[in-house]
Length: 174
Image (cartoon, rainbow, N blue to C red; front, top):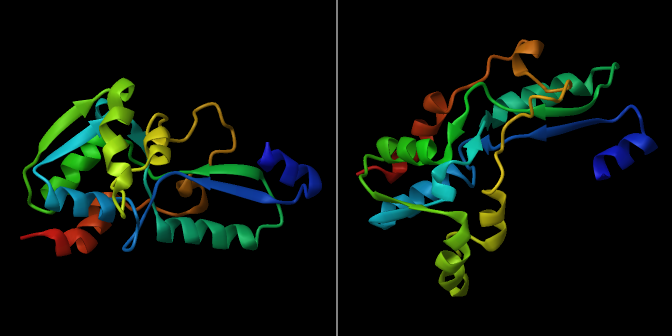
């Protein structure tokens, strides 16, 4: 509703809604690499089936820069990378990159809150209830949205996690 309120006040606005953003200081791949580096087992909330379509921060910046000079505003854009991964696939990728083996524990959402409740007393929570809630929904481009921001439509070749993430997760390796 907020997006449409912005557009009703200023029809020349462009709203860009990125999927999961990754880059050297991201709070996703780095956070999970840190957790996977410390513990022998890892919970796959929702059985690890949540889907993500990560977009590289520089690709997103390039798209935003193009829109700053675009006089033909297009309203709302969803932006994601070219590849779609499940949460389990991302965790397996991180484990491969940091050269670790861990037990992956599929946990259905129905019992996930019980599992993370004790963690909420820690000063730095590994996962919050809000983060758990966000894992309930796929974070990919909607197929019914005609205004999806395909990076390729703007001459931007989407950067794969395989090309960037290993560069900054190497600090978690043996």
